[in-house]
Length: 496
Image (spheres, rainbow, N blue to C red):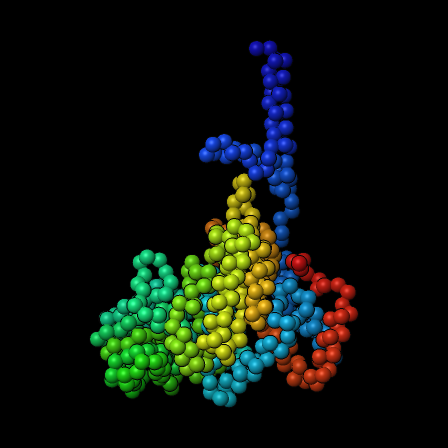
C-alpha cells in the first residue's frame, strides 16, 4: 500500500471520528437491546473545567460562622442580621423567624439549675452510623449547656459506635421496624423511640464500657447516670446495676402496659457497667448520661429514607418522649430515596410521605423543636466521569421547601459541601473526606460536617444571647430595615 493511501485512510478515520464527536446524539443511539454511545465535544470540554477547591470552601464555611469583632452592639446585630438572611451555610428558619430556637435555648440554659437532662433525638441514615456527625454536635452542646455520656443506646447494638462499647447475654431478642430480611418484626408496633426494642425473658444482661476509640470525644466517656426505658413488663420486673465497684440498689417495676423509666444516679463517673434484668419486658433503650445538661441520642437507620416513623405505636412514642424530656428532633434523610427519583412526580410523592412523618412526630413530641438536615451531594458515573446524581439538586430544594412549610428548620448540607460535584472532590481530597462509593463521608469528612452543623446552630445561640441585652422592639426594627436595605448577598463562593 502506498504511503499516500495510508495517510488518506488515517485522515478519513479522523474525519469520521470528528464528525461523530460533534454531532453524535448525547443520549446515544439505541440498537436493539443495546445503546451505542460516543463521547461528545461538550463532554470533552467538561474535563477542562476547573475543579472546586474543597479546602477553600471549607475555610469559607468556617469563616462564615465567625463573629465579626465590633465595638458596638449595633455592628454585632448587623452581622447576625446578615447571617440569618443571606449566609448560605445558615440554618433556614420557617417564616424567617429568628426566635425559632429561643424556647429551646432557654430550656438548655436552665438544665443545670433544674438538674434536668433535655434530650435531642438525631435520626438519620447511614451517614450518622457509628455516632458520626452526632458525636461532634453532642460534644459542642454539652460544652455549652452541660451533660455527658454517649446517651441513648439500644439493648442490642448491631453497628459499632465510636462513643461506647457494649455487649449482651441471656434471653434478649431484638425486633426492628426497619431493616433487611434478616431482622425480626414484632407482632405489634411498640418499637419505641429508637424504632427497635429487645424483648427480655427470664434473665439477661446488658454490659457497657467506656470507649477507647481515639475518635471519641471526652464528654462521651463520662457516665454518672444510667437509665433503662422499658414497657409492657411483667409484675416485679427487676433490674440490677453493677457499675465498677459501686453498690447500687436493685430497681423494681410493677406490671404496667405503658412505658417506665428506671434510673440510677451514681456518685462518680463509671467506666463499666452491667445491667441484669429478671422478668419479662420490652427494652426500648439504655441511657448513659451525666447528672444534668443536654443529651444527644444517635439513631442511625441504614438504607432508610425517613418514612418509617408512622409505623411505630403513637402512645409508646409519646410516653417515651415525655418521660425523657425530648425537646429537639433532628431528621437527616433524603439520600436513600435518590435511586428511586425519576422526575418531579416521584419527588412530590416523597414529599407527601415526609409531610406525614413530620406531622406524626409533631403529634407524639409536641414540645420538640424540629430540624431537618438535607442530603449530602452524591456522586454517580456519567460517561466515565463522576458527577452529581441527576435530580439531587431538585430533591434537596423540595425537601427544604417542605420542611419550612411544615414549620421545621432546614440545614442545607448539599450546598454547605459546595453543591454539585462536591462529593467527587471530597473523595479526591487529601486526606479523603468521603469514601470511594461517592456517597458516604469518611470519619474526617463526617467530623467536618458535624463541626459545621454545630457552628451554625451555636451562632443562633450567640444571637439569642445578644438579644437579651437589647429591647425586642429595637431588634425587630433593625432586622426589618437591614433586610430591606441590603443590596448584595453574603460574600461566599458557594452562595446560590
